[in-house]
Image (cartoon, rainbow, N blue to C red; front, side, top):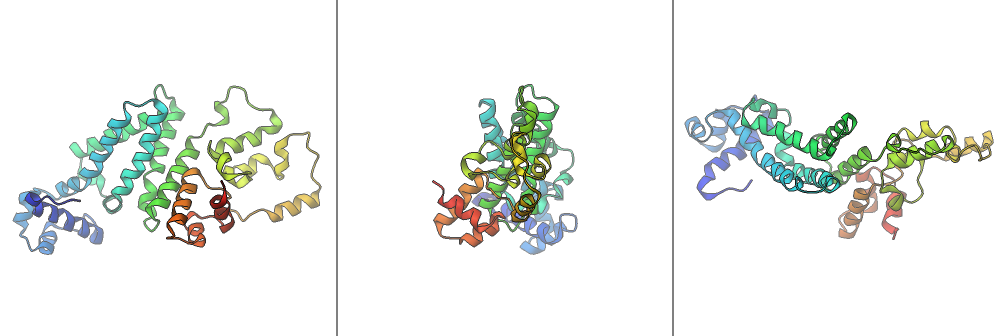
Length: 303
């Protein structure tokens, strides 16, 4: 928040209000407390902000203005370009306003149903429309709403994750969410290879090129169920059955559940930037991205 010399008192009030809202919450912070923090009278506060909800609206204003600017720019672009302009720009704007958004997440609704509320709703609806695309059906519109949530909510709940890592994770989640689904393909693969197709779609269009050979885990939590107890089943009935002992051995060698075997495009780029900057060790990068050191090494050394 940049202070203008002619408006320095107003800016100081906003900064103090944000600090106190963070410490005590919006509802438990009074105008008198804000005045005491700045050694101003309540009357001086009221001169700039006639009511406490005006403070909240003013703190939300920069976020709203940046989102509106983003949507205006995306509005003139082709559908696919507009979709990712909105999602990538949305993440960047949310991260740029990370502190006020995190502190005010539960209080923004308190701005009432005035101009700020209507602008918030309009921004959300415009973003959903641009992501869903023209003539979108119910499923596409639902996915668009989910994608906006995937690019917003983690900022509030993962306050200790660095911006660069969180940005990569959020965009990777959005790409996986919006990846083509097998049901969208007119001519599906033979029944014996259905599980393999489900794996490719769930992993997103960018995983094959960057992650190398795919494992069940890279496709998401439903890949094991789709593929059956043996990964070779995805090759169809032409593949000989695996002996029970071999299947048991293969299962025992599988990675631990809950740790992804591959990274998405944004996560790979983030890992390489962190490594090149010399600010993070491989262990630190692996911990930040929630993968093994071997996975990090594989992507760092890939051409």
